[in-house]
Image (cartoon, rainbow, N blue to C red; front, side, top):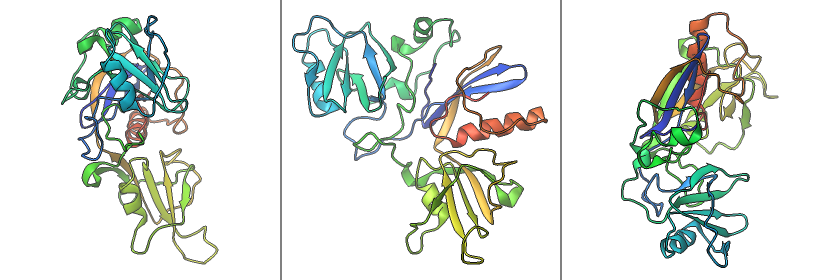
Length: 298
C-alpha cells in the first residue's frame, strides 16, 4: 500500500512486536520548467482495466501529453497509461485503478490535470489501511490512493528533480558521534573545481548519505568522496572511517498512519540487528527518511 504527502515524502507507520514500520511518499513544491502541475502524473504505474470498446488501441504516440490528449478527447475516458518504451497509449474509465507497471518507464494520469492535485494534500480517513486494496482506496478522496513519489517535482524525462533551493535536512553527522561507516558507497571522482562532496550530495535528491575519508587513496592523506542512495550498516559497518559524513533527508515527510500488529513483507535490510530496541527504531526510521524511494520501515 502506498500513501502520499505534501511537501515531500509521506509516512505510513506500522508496528509489530515493538518494531516500527513506516510508509513514506514524496512530495515537493512545483517546478516551473515542468509542463504539468505537480501531482498530476504518476510514474511506473498503469491503470487497469483498460477500456475494451476503443478501436485502434493501443495508440502509438510520442509522449505522455499526447496520450493524455487522446484520453481527454475520448468519451468515457478518465485515465491514460503511456508506456514510454513502446510509445503505446492505453485508456481507462473511471472504475479503473492504478497498479505498479510490470516494466519501468510508464506514465499515468487523468484526462485533465487540476491546478492543484488532491494527491498532494489529501489524507485518508480512519479506516486506512483497510483489509483489501479496494477498501483502502475507498478511504481516500476520489477513491484513489496516491502513488509513490507522485508529488515530487520531475524533469521532463520523469527523473526526480532536486528540491528547490537545495533543501536538505541533516539526520546524522559524524561531528555528533555518528560512525558513518556505510558499506554501500560509490566513489565520486568527478567533482568540479570548488565543488565539495557535501554540495554534490545536497544538490541531488538521489543522494542520502555522503562521506569523505583519507585512507583509501593511493596518495597518502588525499581525501576521497563517497555517496550512496541510502546507507547500509552505517553504524556498525566496515566502510572506511570518515573524516566527515552525514545522513541527509531531501524534502520533508508526513505520517499517514501508525499501526500495530502488521508485518510488511518484501523489505530490504538496512542494517544488522540492534540489541537496543529504541535505538534500533531510531536508526531504522532515519535509514528510511534518507532514502528517497523508501515508503515503509519496520
